[in-house]
Length: 98
Image 1 (cartoon, rainbow, N blue to C red):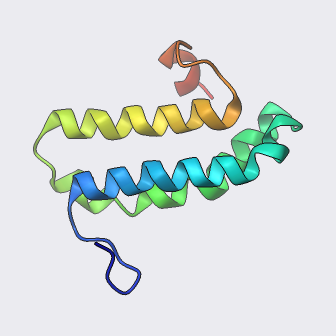
Image 2 (tube, one colour):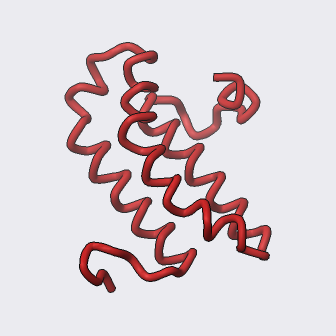
């Protein structure tokens, strides 16, 4: 439940809301994303998506479950693939080099 524009301090809640927010932003920017270069799509991802993931860093540091940390990393990579138009099967090593 959202209270005065803030989300509860729960890792799972933050992650679900960030996925939803990422999908909304991608859908609204889709006309621009389809007609722009890969570099432009990467820049838009850095401007709109990365700041949302920075809010979860304090929870990430104090989270003990490695599966939740892995899920966050996968979600971040998937958002990048979604914004840039890359297939889900693209090797992770290629993305880490970007």
